[in-house]
Length: 134
Length: 134
DNA sequence: CAGTATCCAACGGGATACTG
DNA sequence: CAGTATCCCGTTGGATACTG
Image (cartoon, rainbow over the protein chains, first blue to last red):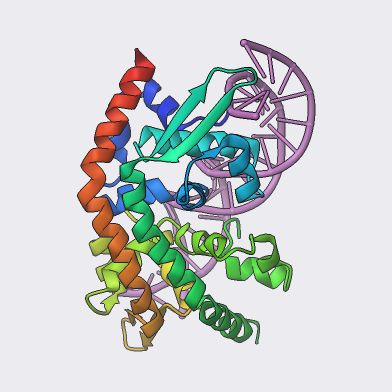
């Protein structure tokens, strides 16, 4: 496997892993939200559980790989539950845990910030890039 | 230059750049916080302006490269100001703009979440990894 | 002091093909 | 349906050396 999950890497280096991340919780936070899609997944699951394919449609643009990987890492962190119903064909539901819901609050606050202030950020970028070019 | 900033890339592809990022503000938000250190920088500057070297000491673990790059991208986005005092030696101060301060609120909410819930995340990880190993 | 320049290893993540 | 397995390229970002 060329691309390995954090869990898989940990298998190879059992205890040294968490150590090389910074010790401050802010660093840990970044490790959590750093994954490009986890934020999307959490906010997608806010309104209720979804199936694998639902997530794919809801998020749109995510690759199959990330669509598996992101919920898995969130499952590892205890933020989402993954329920497999062994029917044929299989059915898998993802949902937020209580812990996951507790994160979705602050997360959506950030989302609101982005929505309300993004025009100003764009504006600033335009100015900055204009100055640089000139 | 091997590693190029977003601004520099934009110079080469003037208008197509923002288009290839998702159009939803959540995507944009990730583009903003995706940079590993921007969160740290914003929260470091919360209590007041700092000089380059202060930031380095405050954040600890950041490389010289990121210590320049992160504030720059935040400057581009209109979140921090960069003030150069042309003395000898030079002195550079970084500070949050009003926009930057408005972000620091939601951001610190997230930080609080990380601080209060991280033991539970660790716990979950331990369980998960234990099950995988077994 | 506050950067810039260069090099390069490692990780993220998309495309594609295959499976229980 | 919900993945897993491979391949592979682009970007991130650390180390190191040099500069106005």
